[in-house]
Amino acid sequence: MVSAGLQMLGAVLGVLGWIGAIIVCALPMWKVSAFIGSNIVTSQITWEGIWMNCVVQSTGQMQCKVYDSMLALSSDLQAARALTIISIVVGILAILLSVAGGQCTKCLEDKSSKTKVGITAGVMFIIAGVLCLVPVCWAAHTIIQDFYNPLLVGAQKRELGAALYIGWGAAALMLIGGGMLCCNCPPKEEDSYTANTGGNLGSL
Image (spheres, rainbow, N blue to C red):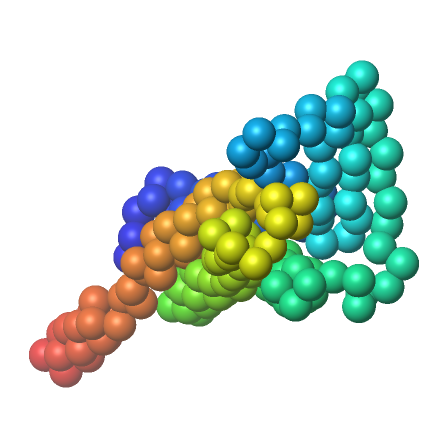
């Protein structure tokens, strides 16, 4: 059995990563306009997210517009929209299971069942972390590939947005937290040894 402190730490890290995934999903800063060469345009900055794009003027004014159609998104952002939502849903299930399987809770009385539920929560956090990591890495790869593409003009090139960095951190937290929860081991040998010892004493 893993210690209650380690299990609680794993659950907390998983929850923090899940909150980060929600921020990544909502934040319209996956891609930001790149300033390249002598054609630096400081009058406005363009942000692109999976739900909307925003234009920030040099005066501080910001205008955001929700995409009219999903077809307006690039393939990487279309996949990111689906995968991040699935990651959040899986994260919710992982949180519920981690509460049910926590050593400090009384949702389940059987220690073996509680341990298995805790391990399942860890696996779910790991799956949620991978689902968050894949679209972030895919979007970053596309941005870097387009940045060094000589066929694209400077106005079409983008840089890595803050949402991608948050996404990497969120995925790491969920993976680490899930790994901690998976360190739980059912106390099978101890229980069977106790049962056998009790049986032997009874026969004597």
